Every structure is written in structure tokens, then in C-alpha cells.
Length: 182
Image 1 (cartoon, one colour):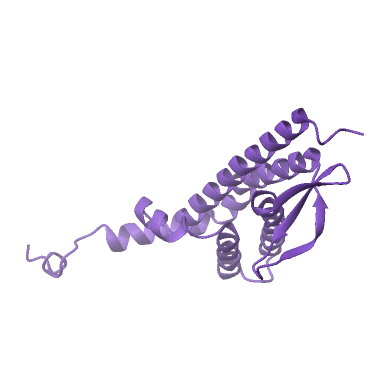
Image 2 (cartoon, rainbow, N blue to C red):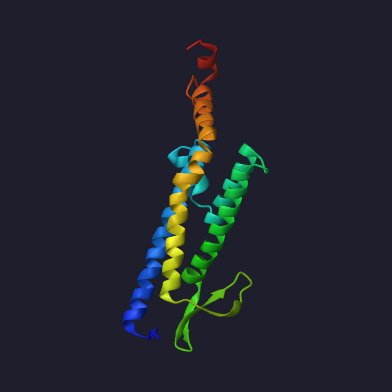
């Protein structure tokens, strides 16, 4: 059995959590970029409207957009909803690691989560570094799927948003300009 109390193990465990945070941040950024394209948001609009939202809220928006664009019965919509729910569970685990309280119980690193109810939830959960590695690899795979699977599903919507923006917002701005008097 690996000595989880050793300095080397704790250092590697900490590095794995740091890597998880960076990968999760990259996923969140990719998701924000996709939603920004779908709604044809400027960089400022994206920073004000999307960046402050949690990843969970962005995934909810993605699910609603998929249902709006292609309907509830479309198999790809169902796949995106299932994918989003799976990613949410991965982010729950990420939140446990980032916001949980670590400790050593029975020679293992375990995490306890401080819940919204201002109490510790459940028994401490074991988190060997291999589990952390599996988690950041799963989130990294989900980030790759944004580009390979999710974005193509919304490509016609993104193109329509661009065309609408160009036809409605890149023309004359003032009432006098619109009337052709300036």
C-alpha cells in the first residue's frame, strides 16, 4: 500500500489538484467561447454576461439552446443533455477537491465537503491521486468534445447568428442614418 502520508505523495497529490484546476478552467473557457459564438457576443459582452456564470449554469444554457435549436426529441440533443449532466457530475467532484476540507483518516487522504447548508456533508471520501488524475483526464476529454462533437451541432445556429448580426447591427446606427438623411 502506498504511504499517502509521505511528503512525496502529498506533493504529487497537490500538483494533480493544481492540474485539475487548470484543465477545468480551460473547459470553462471553451464552453464560454462556444456560447459566445452561438449568441454572437462581443468580448465585452462575453466577459460581462458569460464569464461570471458557473460552469453548471453555462451547461444549463447549452442544454436549453440544444433543445431550442433542434428540439427535445432529436437524438443529438439527448446526447448533449446526457453529456452535460456527466460533465456536471465531474465538476461536482472537482468542487469537492477544490473546496473540500482534506484530512488523513485511516492512513488515506480523504475529503469532506462543506455544503451550502453550513454543515459538513457525509463521511469523508477517499481521494487517492489516481482518482484525481482520472478526473482531470475526464474533464480534458470533455473539453476536446466541445470542439469535435458539440460545436458542429450548433454550426448552423452560429452561422445564422453571424448573418443576423451583420444584417441588423452593422448597418446605419442613428435614426437619421437609417432614414438616409446623413
